Image (tube, rainbow, N blue to C red; front, side, top):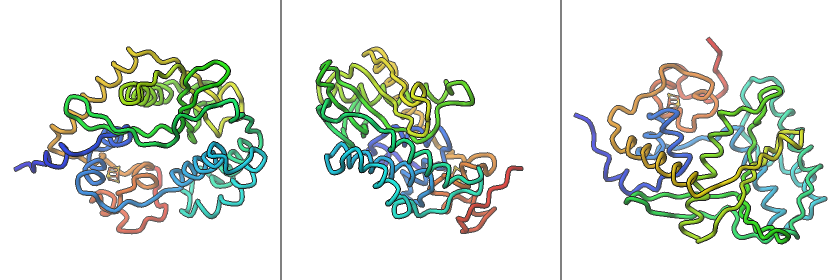
Amino acid sequence: MTQDFSFILDSLKFSNSSVNSFETCSLMFKLSYIDAKEKIENFYSQFGNHVHRTLEMYFDNKLEIFQLANYYAENFGVNITVAPPPFPKDLVSKYFEDGLTFFNDFSWDRDGLEILFREDFINSKIDNIELVVKPDLVVREKETNQVILIDYKTAKIMKGKYIDKKKLEEYKKQMFLYSYIIGKEKGISIDKIKLLFIREKDPLAQIQEVCYTQEDGENTIKEFLETVSKIKAESEWKSKQKIDYFCSEICSVRLSCPLYVSKFGLDISNQFVQE
Ligand code: SF4
């Protein structure tokens, strides 16, 4: 007999990351959002949080622009405590240097921006489904009066010489979802989206500008709600077929996953070996 989780799923606030986690591994979704298993952090999420925090300090007027690189460097070891995966090699020093270069070169003038909201949770309800989004930063550019949604990304967007178009499409969908909800709940129309890839050194790669239309938002929300319907209809909650890099280094509920535990026990130290 399949278990009925509708009492939990009907009251869940769906987010971009929860819906993505279902697409990645339905068991991960169940362990995270239905069973509420304890989560463990990983190097990548801690690095992302550290970069976000450093930028927050600037946009909250708590740091001046010339203090950013110092703050980033001094707090790197304080905020990033989880051991990195064993490969790619020299991951910590590469990430550290990428972030340091970014903050050394950072030149956004906050005086030219009116901060509308920053890291705020925005709740919505569509077709009886609760949703929540948390945009990094929404600003009005004083010179142009344009409203810009800004999102910081710590993954790279370039694959060699070319843009990773698949990844960019995923990020665009996330931004369209946010823009739609901001429009619906705050009555603010997003004119432009800027994805800031902090680990890219080429200025052309570092900022990806994306236009937004209401139609983009409507199409994205439709797809989002279709995935929520799939989640609500799910009964198997299957794990991945075999342990991969994601399972071993990123999945935050791996210690509750039978597939992971049967292979590695309760040891979280980087054990993945490509087979
Ligand atoms: S460890 Fe892998 S298979 Fe298990 S829940 Fe996480 S992502 Fe899914």
